[in-house]
Length: 538
Image 1 (cartoon, rainbow, N blue to C red):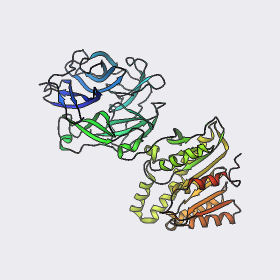
Image 2 (tube, helix red, strand yellow):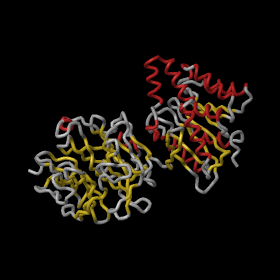
Image 3 (cartoon, rainbow, N blue to C red):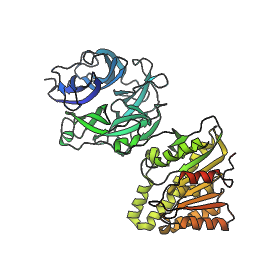
Image 4 (cartoon, one colour):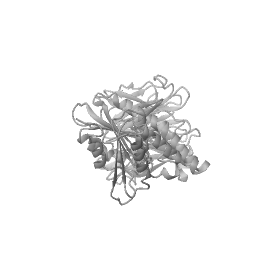
């Protein structure tokens, strides 16, 4: 029987009102064919008794046709699959108009002939629309160290492909869930966040889990986000026990109303389906039940040896414009984007460039370092509150300050920005960073919203650091807090220190809010940055 060893690793597509699945089936001799099944609801499938694609070409004989992905352009379905002849595995293509009769187009990416991949090629996931007048495809190649990593190629005809990068576009990460294999999953989605790609990763023990990557929709080579932890992992018995143990391998995805259905192979023996919220017009963390939009332009900037990301909002026109660097707080993951989403468009509407850089370990820069909250928590657990506070001060004064100053340096090089009219603002930890930045950089003005309010009383080192910074500040600072904030001491102590030092400052304590305030209001920041005592905006 052609399915006797297992049916797994499915591709899916919507066709004539039904969900059509092409799945890999393997016989007892290890030869693979592609079976056909269809469903009205995406859950219950009826399969045909015979395969729709069986090994015929020399590059498929004995091993077979494996691991399909489906993409449609015009009236034609494009099937990327692995042709395996028990010696070489190579990425191949076939086309069809009805999903049952297939015309082979041959090997797309030959084995052993890549720029960096020196072995097999597999798993072609084609972007659904042209970008820069080209088709784009993510794929798997084998590097010199025998690890499997992700490559990228482009084409003008979907037949002839050219590698787009000299190195893997999404490399392995030692010590993480994708330390051994980084392999494209289903064809990616184009969303407001960028090119959203589910990928399959394996660690050094060859446990397969799924991750999430987002690439720039204008430059598919540019990585905007990559999950540090897997979003899907083997849990069920049939995902842990089979031909290959501990494997979930996502290859198919369809949108159905407000949900996404992911089709995957379990333990190289079974086909499964999992449900998630729709990723359309949402960001990287949507697969982890957090949604947000990336309405600004995502950019990269260097900080030492790191590549960090930020979100840029620009006014209409060519500029140059005044600008503000906004330092996010300590919220984990993409939660800092809430401030960017709220503030960025309003600043742009008022003629300001708004730049929200993500410091290492957070947001779109999550893969560039450890999350500061985790480092503080680890230090507190090991040495108590004093050790935690010391770690907080050390990181804010070094790594995170360096990231802020690197963002400022990058912003000053942009032709649409007035380099001598750049202000800084921030909330919570970002408020602390704002005060430190005002000491170390020639900003034209600064707005500190509740910087240190929650940490002040327990961190004498922080009190000393911020007091020293305001005494040395190169810019006037506007301090802003709600009267029911955690602690008003930071604003009061720091403004007194600035008064004693002859520095220019302003203080505003607003009416109580429903809960302690950790983010400055638009009106307060705009009031500060447009005042005569701040940036002298013409």
